[in-house]
Each structure stands twice: as structure tokens, then as C-alpha cells.
Amino acid sequence: MTKVSDRLNRLAESATLAMARMSRELQAKGIDVIALSLGEPDFDTPEFIKEAAKKAIDDNFSHYTPVPGLPELRSAIVQKFKRDNNLEFTPDQIVTSTGAKQSLANLCLSLLNPGDEVLLPCPYWVSYTELVKLAEGVPVEVPSTIDSDFKVTPEQLEAVITPKTKLLMFSSPCNPSGTVYTQSELEAIAKMLEKYPDIYVVADEIYEHINFTEKHFSIGTIPSMKDRTITVNGVSKGFAMTGWRVGFIGAPLWIAKACNKIQGQVTSATCAIAQKAAERAMLADPRSTTQEMRDTFLKRRDMILAKLNNIEGVKCNVPEGAFYVFPDVSCYFGKSDGTTTINNSDDFCMYLLNSAHVALVAGDSFGNPECVRISYAASDDKLMQAMDRIKKQLAQLN
View: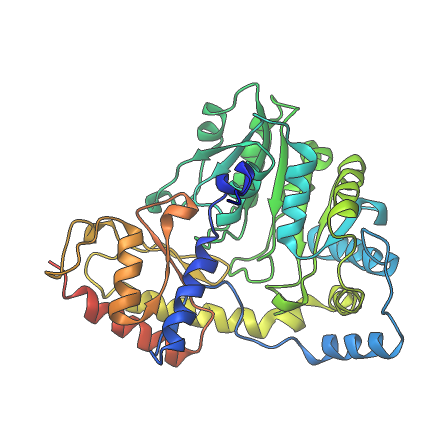
């Protein structure tokens, strides 16, 4: 009998990918499922980026590249960080990977020893906990609620710091809540962290360009955080390039070298053609490239919030970025339609998938079990249909 490793048994299946799989299974049976579970822009990659990829093929960029990426791509990322974020790096501080998920895996495997603790403000992206566990670290959840706009305070973070604390990992704009930390809020966290110089910060900024506030602020620009922040980003969300699989970090040199070493043994570099496309994306003015998508998502956010706020018991904050809403649906826990009883957010999502044929993701995997994540990266028509189905189905519960 074949037995998989204990390492694998410690990992949970990605909740978002699991729901996508179940949606596809129902769709294969001819059921009209509206899938609002995956974090993928429903836009196509801009033409000028595709043209850069076509040119790369014609120019025979079909060979191995340096593990951390082509020099010209890393130079373009340096320019992007300076232009968009006021972050200063040199090309040897940049490591490009097969998506930002691999960037995060590289960081965990490079920095964590068994038993090292990682602070995860809730809610967090589903893969954070599993990547920490893969590296034999210990995820430490720092709870938040919808009433605090899903933000945690410096005092909450400090209360769970121990001598084993190694990393603070968070996203802003946040997946799944859409929360955006302000400059003053991040400065307060940085001020607290000055007392703990051995703690490093992983700032996931993949949703940087889908931000409905005045401006995006990077914690790595704070002087005390410059040499202890790893900024993670990529092209998937802001440039609608999910399938191209290019993510990257800007990090202290020793951390970049460590990630390069890990990646060199696991995958080596990502696709050379995708790198040339990403280079073109990095050199573009993000305002002209991403503005239409951002404006569309903002319109959809307001539209979906108006619908959700008309469903009795559903409680929403106002997301300031990304393309998700993360409502508290706990008022439905304990209710039944006579056949199915809703005990938790998993039950809630399965009830809507099987009865309303709308796919959402339960909040348990994000650290907030009272919530569900709804992606509004879908057409206006699909979103309105989904909201109407949800309202009608929830009315059956009492």
C-alpha cells in the first residue's frame, strides 16, 4: 500500500480550487453554475503585452534563463518598484517566480525553521497557512471582525509575539476582504515592530492596482522597515495575466539569494516568453493599463453591495480594493430549509452550490469562519443573477 508523506497529509486542499473543481463537476452535468469562487479577472491580457510575447517567440526566447529571471525583466521590476511604490532595489534583489504563490513558498522555505511562528492577520489568503506548514512553521492567527473592517491593530499583533515569531505576512489590498491598510495604520504597525528587530514582514501587494483608495502605500517605504520587508507582487491581477504565471519579490539581498537557491533546485526560472511579456507590462504606465479594469471592479463592488445589503441578515463592510466581498453570514447558522441545516460557512456554501447553483468560498480557510468570500470578477449579468439566486434560496431558511 502506497502511503503519502506526513508533509502532504498536513496540507489542506486549496479551498478556492476545491470549490472551482466542484463547480466544474456540476457544469459537466449540464447544470448552470455561476462560479464566484476564483480570484481571476474576467478581462483579457492587454494587446501590447501579448504582442511582446509574440515578438519574444519570433526572437527565439526559447532557452533557459537565469534562475531569478532575465536581467532586463529584473531591471524593469526595479523601475516599477521605484515608479509605483517608492521602493528602491537593485536587480540582484529581485527574484521572479512562477507566480506570486511560488514567491511566497520560496520565502517560507528560505526563512522558516521548524517551530518558527508566522503572524497572520485574519482574514488571510488561503495558501498562507499551508505554505507556512509546508515549511514546518506555525501559523498564528490574529483575529479581526467585520466591525473593525477586518483590520488588526499593533496591540493585537504585539499580544501574540513570542521569541519564536519570525514573520508577519499580510496582503493589502486584502484577499479575501478587500481591506486596504492606510499609511498611518502601517506606520503604527512598523513603530511597534521596532521593538522586535528579528521579525520580518512579507507584504503581499498583488492587488496593488485594484485599489479604490487615493493611493497604495507600501510598508517597505518606512525607513525602519526597509531592510526587513519582502514585497511580493506579480502580473496576474492588475494586468489580467493569471495564466502567464509570473510573480516576483523585492527583498534584502540575502533573502533574495536564499530564494534564488531554493528556486534553483525546485523549478529554476519561469517561462522565458512570459518573462518578456511581464517586462513589457512592468514598463507600461499602470494608470492607463489598469484604470479601466479598476473602474469596472469599483462599479461592480457597489452593485453587488447594494444587492447583498438587501438580503436579510447578511452583513457587509465596504471593500477598498481587490475584487471580493467578504460578508458575515453567521446569522444563518443553525437555520434549515427542512432538509439541510446550515451549521457553518462550509454548509452555507454547499447549500448555495447545490440549491442555487452559485459557487462561493467558505471563510474558514481564510481565518474568519463566520464569513464567505464572493468574487465579483464576473459579468454584471452573472453577478445580478447570482445575487437573485442567493436571496431567493436564503429565504427558504428559517
